[in-house]
View 1: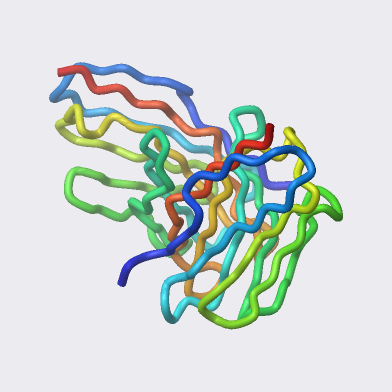
View 2: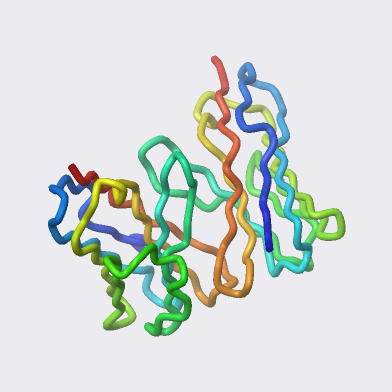
Length: 113
Length: 111
């Protein structure tokens, strides 16, 4: 298996622009997680899907953030409008059942100018 | 609330040394505990997953132990190599849908 695949790997955008991050989980995994990593706050869970259904989005910072999982093999995290404080590395991870072994993608490094 | 602490925050050792990384957690009602490695600019790589019913797991030169009652786990690395240099993180599930991560231990193995 190719592992969890994220795109883009790097994104540089200007404040106010829309950003869409994409994730393909490992085939057969039914849980998908979006995390954000910064030096100040470490790894933070943004949202978690189980069987394509959002279970907990309490970590989503504000309404500017939204996430979808239209099918078992694809998820997006959208920020609109983006702000400089959104600059971070965004990771997607998947597992088979929510307490199973967690596998991470390589991350999408976002810089908002 | 589950809090995960890793000590030390940074560790530097000469090549060939055996070393231990520590992870502690406040809520012992965990399903499992997972150790990860993160290289600079990379994602997290799963090293070992210990189920709550297990006391330890081994993979090559790595051995992870779990003591739920005391809220502790250790990652033992035998015969360290420069290629082991990375940040090591432990994580435990919390509230069924959230993995709580420690801040990590940054390991440097000097040739």
